[in-house]
Image (cartoon, rainbow, N blue to C red; front, top):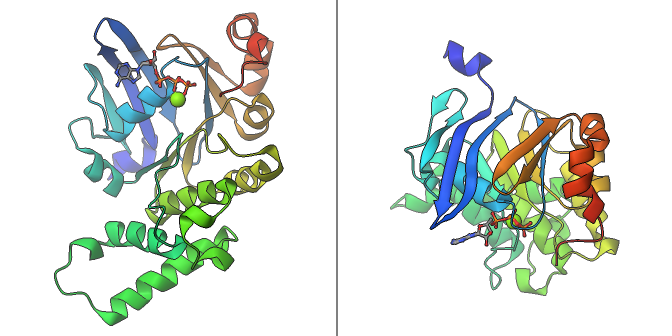
Length: 257
Ligand SMILES: Nc1ncnc2c1ncn2[C@@H]1O[C@H](COP(=O)(O)OP(=O)(O)OP(=O)(O)O)[C@@H](O)[C@H]1O
Ligand SMILES: [Mg+2]
């Protein structure tokens, strides 16, 4: 257990993956310390979402390792990694749109506590689950929407529900893949406020195209280009790096569509 007290929350060593002839991850190294605020930036198609899929176990790497609190989880399936504390949100929302907000969060809580797999449900456990889900929603100022079907919520609030689901997993590592994508700018501050006030113990990796958001949020930034980390540094270092300006910041008109 000594290792887990000193090891980074998440460590990626030499992660590689091809899609046919296309190398989408080329020997990627990345370390998230406990409580990290790390941004992953790079042009469309750089391999950012693929990296999240490799970390969470959606995809198997062809080489390299993923360590969580110092433990190698590379061989573990997605659900086992989730139980060990890796949570993610998706670039495009993946909620049960016909269910209410509360039902969606309860499903996530049940998944974590094992209630979803229990043969004999209990009223007391259900009540505890609902209390926890409501507290989670309250923390995100979504309690007023608890009984609303997700499909009836404005898109910005749907994306907040996704964050609520990820937090219901009580993660140690949270991977946010463009949490404000598709949200009108009038609403995006709701999401960015939540992201800014996440539990400081959770290590957060955010993928985000809006550079104002990135520079405000991140303490470290990795720049991914064509499947490889081109550079990593503090926001100041990244802002001053002429290569980054050339491949990425220079294309600031190229927002995600
Ligand atoms: N399942 C797949 N099979 C084949 N190619 C894929 C697959 N998924 C992604 N790709 C390709 O891998 C590359 C990396 O895609 P990825 O979605 O990881 O990029 P990204 O950095 O997240 O881009 P964006 O900013 O547009 O979200 C792209 O060229 C994409 O077309
Ligand atoms: Mg992506």
